[in-house]
Length: 306
Image 1: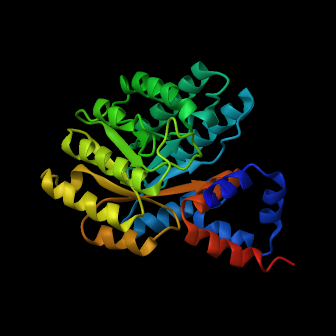
Image 2: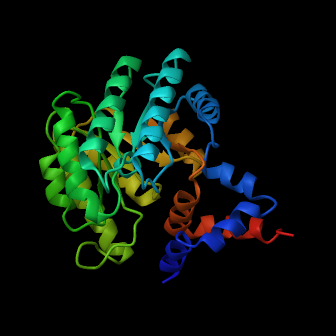
């Protein structure tokens, strides 16, 4: 129920105004979001790269409702990739793209064309792209677009969500040679008919999916902050005789930075998911819903509103 309340707040303009006007909200948001501009994204990318971490940058823009917004998002990714290349931050930094930000919900063909342009720019910049996954209503569309783009861009990454009942089958289909798959738990409120509801069931599904990816021929990207799942992933990598360069861990910017550094120092590739942009509110609310400790941190900041 608590998670449902937070996710409902993500759709509340009143709560958004409260968060945006709280005196210390800027400092709180900076814990999870790099900033609003391309320059902010480059600054944080440089800091993380200097610390031996890899980066996946996400320009926040999920509320795309018109073609001009989708085009603006595409253009921002092109600017970002050019800037990353010029700053010699590739291939340490890649980009993550939500197809909804490119107009997927009202024009799939346009979204695919814009994603193609971003993939081409990433290739020119010496890096790659991962297509983010959103709520279950877009899963088939996203995987169809992914399949088409992979014909020209085979390193294009996919994202699968462990809490969806379908994901084990999707893992089987995407575990072939060279296939980059980010496995996360999932952050959207989904009906019981399509998604597991309890933490135990989600974790068990995640481990089953992890086993499929680790035993396959692709490149698993293990996106979790859960110490138990991290330990299981390390164990499965050993069990399936995977070297550290055949998989990676991924974590969110601002969440468990000490663990990020520990894993990197142990020889693992650790990629930090770094969002930036003005549309930060929905992203932040989902992070709070995922992890109760984040709510406590944020509530203390809001308590100073005056």
